[in-house]
Image (cartoon, rainbow, N blue to C red):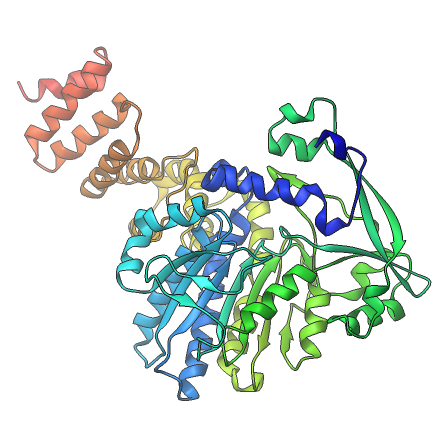
Amino acid sequence: MTDANGQRFRFSEAPIWDLQRTYYEDLGMKAWNNDQVPQYITSNPMIATAYAEIIFGFLRDRADQGDTTETVTILELGAGAGRLGFHVLHKLCELRDYAGIKLPPFRYVMTDLPIKNVTAWSQHPAMQPYVEQGLLDFARFDVVHDSELNLVVSKKTIRTGDLKQPLLIVANYFFDNIPQELIYVGEGKIYETDVVVEYPEQHTKLQTADLLKSMKLTYEHRREPRYEEESYPYRNVIAYYQEELEDSHILFPEVGLACLERLNQLSTAGFMLLTADKGDHRIENWKFAEPPELIFHGSFSLTTNYHAMLHVFDHRGAQTTFPTQHYKNINIGSILMLDDPTKYANTRLAYYQFIERFGPDEFFSLKEWIDPNIESMGMQQILSFWRLGGYDAEFFIQSAKRISNLLPDANDEEMSDIRSGIYKMWSSYYVMEQRYDLALDAGLVLFEMDMYEDAKFFLKESIEIDEDEPVPTVLYCLAICCYELGLDSEALDYTRQALVLEPDHEEALALLKCFE
């Protein structure tokens, strides 16, 4: 690597991409610990619900067309921490069961490059019910090279033409993380924008994330005629850029487009893409664009050129849909590369209802305002936003203290809604290595509402999950729960455990006297 210092690379072949792969392959699921790599915005229950509604609409459209026998494969690219896939599948099954209508069977396939991630998903307790039902499978997939799917659970291989239903592809925070070309448009000509990489001193001793941050990138242009050759597969969009742009640097998703084309070959009926990213689909946002800046978060990401993807597939007869309003945090689009996209009314209607009208981008904007203002919210506002977000665990953790402070003035209906919300949240909770203890916070809130049987369940879960020594106060709360429920022997046992850890615990000492 030392010899390569100052070397010039084609952007898609620069060392940053190998370092990106190394980062994820080395860390596996730990890359998302405590949001080192952000995952909330594209993996929360709200966006998962929107996707599940669109997928459900797609299944209804296939059923309306008489295709209820063959299985629909839902393929998630770059599934990362696995949280999105779990939430989508949870909500999709809920919709299926609630509707009770005839639908084609479906299976969700989670993929990623690091085999560590594939192994972790297959062993995650939350995934097992779906695996056992045949609804969930996993595969390692290299977006740059692979053209087939080797499924881990079923041991099947999906090759060209194997799928008779359209392939449904989910790609969140995916296209901004994979190699891209970087071109420059000037005076009607196309240039390759090469990158010159300079490493800091003693760079071989740096961790991958630190090395990525400390590398210095500079850009140089050279004429590249291949983009202007008629044989270039994306010549139409390049010609459009030559006409519309001037003095503009364009990230071009050649690898991403090629990947979609390979995946399209797996099905005889086309594909549908659902994708969310920091991406621009409007041509005006690429005019006079400067060279890209890498956004670092352990790994790095760039801006996805959704305009190029939209343009390419529009010219091939697809129906592409992106929001008409301007996005702030995340842009969500769909591409229906199908024989007759107009037949998919339920799919398009679901997109309108759950993305266009009010979607995950608007939700996240509200959450950014709410997070620092929770202490000024009332109980009904907290409950309303919690419901809007699909009973999200992270919001409950943030608002638990405020909920506790509001309980003295809460009415029976509000406390009942808190209780039912906690159980809904718990039923769709995907455990990750985070700083918080959801079971503990849920148990303490229920304890303050005198719902002792419910509190006992969650407080016991907290003790069993937490590898650290139990906190005396938690043991005391468990003792009170058992005492109120008439479970005197358990109450005495928890009281004694609390006093072993804290002999001067006044409340536990007082409770102990009740058993004398």
